[in-house]
Length: 160
Image (tube, rainbow, N blue to C red; front, side):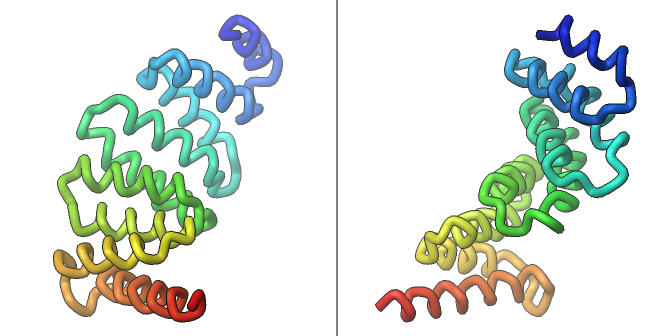
């Protein structure tokens, strides 16, 4: 597969999706350090935000298990979540990045977002409450935790 994708990349070196496939191959081989440059090239070739490519790059960065890669992964996840704001996996990976960075309130908020996106409002409210306790009152993230708690309560009322 690597030989074939290498040939395709030689034929079309500006095709971001060939680099994406190369990254997928390396990631499936448990070689995230080799996947990162391929995904980064794909992201660089894409003229738009490329949320799915950024998510894939972040997954590879987190798969290295190196804390210094978590900040780069978080940056990519934030860009991906601008257009994929209800994607459960993006929020799951965001929670992982925050946890790696020892930012438990933001990990809890990201987990709340993941549960909310998946329709588990009870868990969403629990994680949002946990996040709110560690966030600075009045900040945007604190407000978002409150929004999730309120929306989850409304969803629970609507389901009754």
